[in-house]
Length: 476
Ligand code: SF4
Image 1 (cartoon, rainbow, N blue to C red):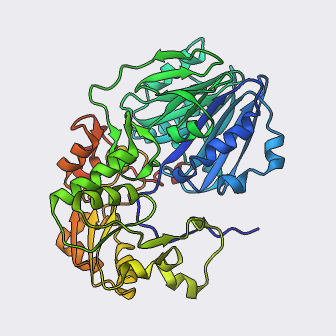
Image 2 (spheres, rainbow, N blue to C red):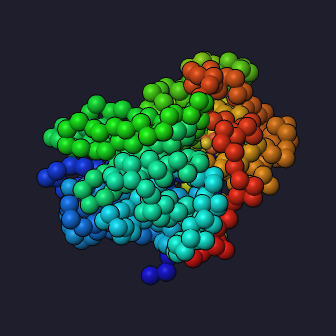
Image 3 (cartoon, helix red, strand yellow):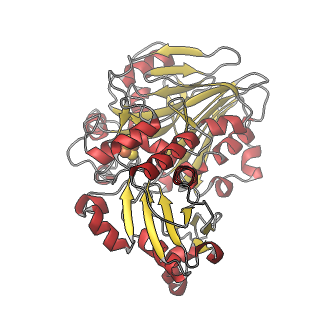
């Protein structure tokens, strides 16, 4: 069947990826991984994959599509074993094809190895060149393939040693899960850019996942984050932990996990994402008090911030938009008529809430600025007398090189327009962005976070000329 991969109107940074690792003796790990990946679906909707080991050999299944489209009961039935790693993908390096979907799997002189990665290596181009010069053929455009090939050739007697050896060459963001025939590892870069947590299963075994919400879905207890620079081997009882590299002097946790990416039930850097978003909304209300009759969120990611805004401002909170939740990423191409519907395909307005009201519309971010205007128009069509837009993060003026597709400088509206110009462009009555200082106050830390997309101060220097499809001409 031909698939049309149509992104419906959305103006958020593209989520990175979700990774999952499980060691659960005597359980149906493939089925567990399926439900774990479901809880990480919001982090990547282009492809999904799973590798399972029965202690002797690995079996891999991956394809383009949502978790529920890629895995049927038939597929899962054939994936027997005690060990598994899985991945939900949005392409941050390489184009969105099946060839680039994860996990990657290869045979090495030490046995089979599979790898799933969330993040981006900023020195991947250089490493790729070195591999190709030494005669290693590469089949994809993904930096994850570079990593698995380096692991296959790394020095050491154990996988702990070989992973540590490879980590010394990697520069950038990586939260990884690795599968060998009888081990599952979770690994996090020394800067700690992307999240990775581990929890214990009540009947024995452990799970690693990008977000703690996925661990709760599987019934995990004793949840903790993998620390920057750590390699952790999942086991039946106690975890085997190895601080392979010292944590970077200045960590670089991604602020956008708090602002938008993570589900509100997640904990990031030990902080409740919902509570942080609630405080972002409060700070936004204190920063520039606004007169209004109703506060509405853009569902779902702005709900916590809008509640915080409403409580701090005293303006009643209500539902203004209903999101067509299940449309997400569709593989059915809309007709020209439907395409012209734009954001209306995804959101309907609750007119009762809006009519004759001064609306305060809270959103978490504006990236390209192509959906805020149409959303405001929907509100005006429904009878809103004024629309005031409040954004719970600062203007995004710089691209991300650490695993998030923010778009290029040309595409980022705040890179070449002032706040006043953006306000005019989207047709709002007023527009306020949260300041960096207030955002960090709401997070509860002034240090240790990456804010490069707001400030342009990159915590890990990016290679010149790096771009999402920068490897496309180098396919081995
Ligand atoms: S640049 Fe922005 S999106 Fe990228 S890691 Fe830093 S805070 Fe996160």
